[in-house]
Image 1 (spheres, one colour):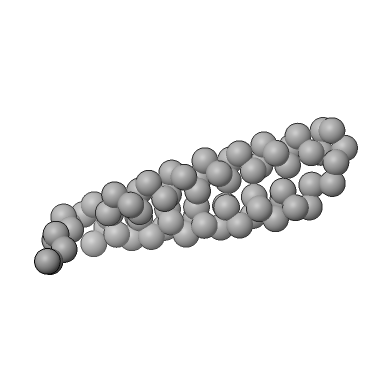
Image 2: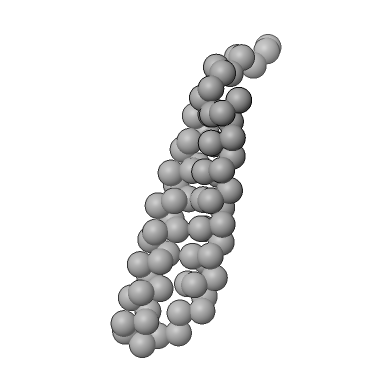
Length: 70
C-alpha cells in the first residue's frame, strides 16, 4: 500500500499537531517556573523542562515553515 502524496506548500498534519502540543507544553512549563519562583520552590527542574519544550517547539515551527516554503 502506498502512502498518499503530500500536498505541496502545507506541512503534514502530524507536524502541525506536534507543533501546537509542544508550544502549549512550553508555555505551561514557563507558567510552572513562574509559580515556583512566586512560591519559593526551586525551579531548576521545571526550567529544564521548559527549555526542552521550547527547543522542541522552536525546531518544529522552523521545520513547519521550511516545509511550507517549498
